[in-house]
Image (cartoon, rainbow, N blue to C red; front, side):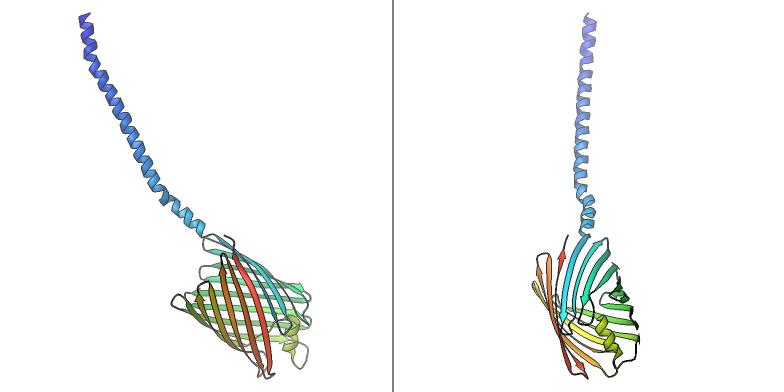
Length: 287
């Protein structure tokens, strides 16, 4: 009996030791779990950051523009644009008309990625006019090169053209920006014989073509308001013709919306004719 009691007493410390060891292991395991949880929580912001950054790259906006001029033309354009991961797609519709130009609809589609931008416009036999045009633009920092082409058919009139435009832009501080552009177009018009076939074509289609144009503009940021004056000189298709135009634009940022308005005036030679036009619009960031 004494031997059995002694054996139990000798075994008791071992049991306590095992209990202590088990408690120690549980404590160590719990500590390890807490450390792993702390490490995981510390790593979560790093893992979540790319998702948050990617969400910021998604954007969408809608815009509309209305315009009218003393030639009697009127124009409304609606468009929507979405961007994600450096890619942008846009779709739009235009309705225009004038004293001799019936109301017509035009479709617009665009694509942009990195320095490349592509835009196409199409009038699908609207009120007798079939017209297609496109631009391919490449921009590198402050320089842009744009190639364009368009073709149109209206009754016995058939017009074809192709051109190139160069854009230069520079910033002077954070609030002042300026740019110059120059473009040259090759024009061809098959039309019935008349005193001024180009003028007759333009009045029926509202396609006022130019052989060349040079322009300059300045943008001055005044907080939520920006003023944008611009000047241009161009040559219409008629021999000896010249057009000079000046305009003043105004942009106002109101929350997620950017409001804009522009008033312009032009003078044509040798007709000695003055022209005036107004436009207004808004661009709204949807998200």
